[in-house]
Structures are given as structure tokens and as C-alpha cells.
Image (cartoon, rainbow, N blue to C red):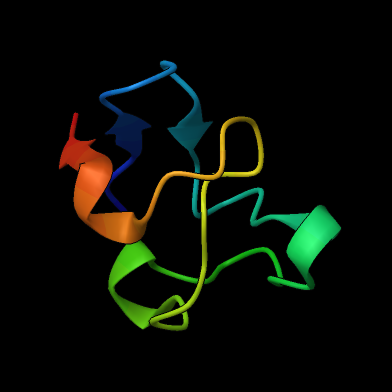
Length: 52
């Protein structure tokens, strides 16, 4: 699965880890994140992320 990086703060979303702070289970691909998911570090929308 592809990792995605926030173009604003550099946070890397790793699908193998998920995002526990927002209830995203490990194994969740970036494409399957809810539309209202935001970067846990800076609050940027999903459209601020770029594929690594």
C-alpha cells in the first residue's frame, strides 16, 4: 500500500499503521479514508496529501 505525505507539515500517512487518533484501523488505504479525515498533525484536508 502506498504512503502519502502532507505537503504542509510533512506528516506521512502509512496505511499499515492507520491513524489511531481518528479511529482509522491499520490496513486502511489512503483512498478509503473518510472524506472528512484531516492530517493529525496540522489539520490539513486530504487534498493536501501527495503519494510518496
